Image: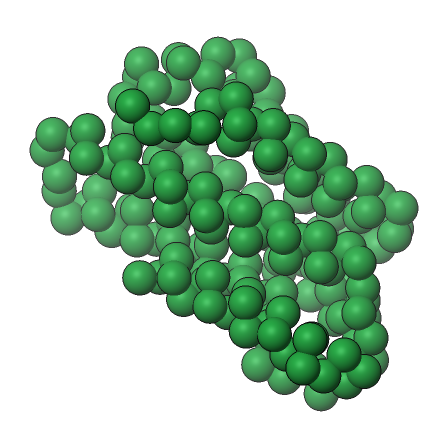
Length: 177
């Protein structure tokens, strides 16, 4: 349900852009992050079907997965705020709120470690050393992105993130077995 709210938030934000394209100046890096987070939501929704493999559920495990979904929703809310009144456009908004956005994104990757471990040691081991490099690297890039306003860095980061994200999903999660 929470993931559905996040998807609805992103799609509503995109629909507002289509409905009122001149209301706020668009920013391609912001839009690329919208695509990345939308892909994260769809991937989360797809992959969490595998939670059926967990034989013993506790309220703590359920709360953990719920918390993960809440953090993903927060990313959506940070991409499309209720009001853009205080900003000249999405670029201005993106850079003013980047510490929040990238802080939450880094937290999502920390939570992902717990989620991966919850699915079992064999599941985590199946990703090999790539996972052990991937997660800290993305967290580090998020920390840098919190403090750096450089447009080239942010464009390169989101391009890297989207390309790697798509590759990761296709290589590891193309089908549920």
